[in-house]
Each structure stands twice: as structure tokens, then as C-alpha cells.
Length: 141
Image (cartoon, rainbow, N blue to C red; front, side, top):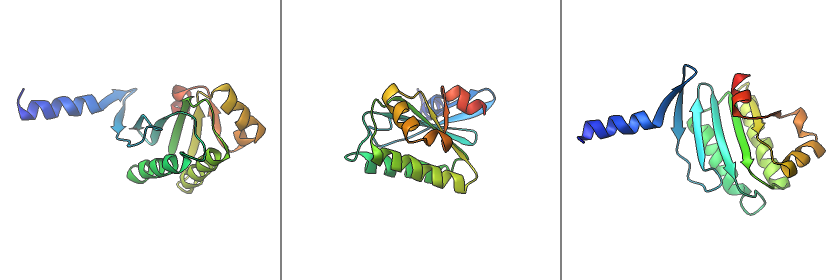
């Protein structure tokens, strides 16, 4: 395979078209954010692991780096692989929300695990975050 063909293959692998909207994979440097992509005016981020005081600063830094590269009107945080988060993680989510709201945007939380959903409900954070079933529902709004 020649250089131009390899480049075209990598580009095709990094870009996909879904529902007529271009999806671009975004590089992340954190084990807490295994994948992220930009799709239209949204940035979709999959988070992983227990998020607490020990790793929330890294999470904050990585999320803010992603938002700096691609300022989103919507950010979708897929929490399917987050079994636990503490108040420091909630503080990071609120900071993300404040930044996105300055752009007139919205933050969607998807695929909540029972323990995380309980925390969101107890803290009444469902009134400031859009809590939806999955990424598809968030992107449809």
C-alpha cells in the first residue's frame, strides 16, 4: 500500500457518516476517557472507571482539553462504564456544564449505572443536566 493509500485508509477509518452527520474520532490521553468523537455540534465522550478525588483532576483536564479543541454546543457524557463517582467528579461535571452553557449549550448524561444515577437523583442534578437513556437519545434532541 502506497503512502497516499495508507493516508486515505486512515482518514476513512477516522471519519464516518451517520445520519448524514460527519463523525470524527478525537484523540484522548487518559485511561478515564477511552474514546471521544465529534458529531455535528456535539462532542460525545465515553468515561470509564470509578471517578473520585484521586483521578477527577485528570478527568477535568482531559475534558477541558477536548472542549478547547472542539467547542461543543452539546456534550454527551456516556457513563455506562462508571460504577461510582464522588463529589469531586460531580464538581467536574458542573464545571463542564458551566463552560458549555456559556456557549448556549447543554450537557447530556447517558447510560447511568444505578449507583451514579442515585447520586444524581439525591443531589437533584437531573434538574441541571439532561439525563437520557443513551447517546442516540441525546443526539436526537
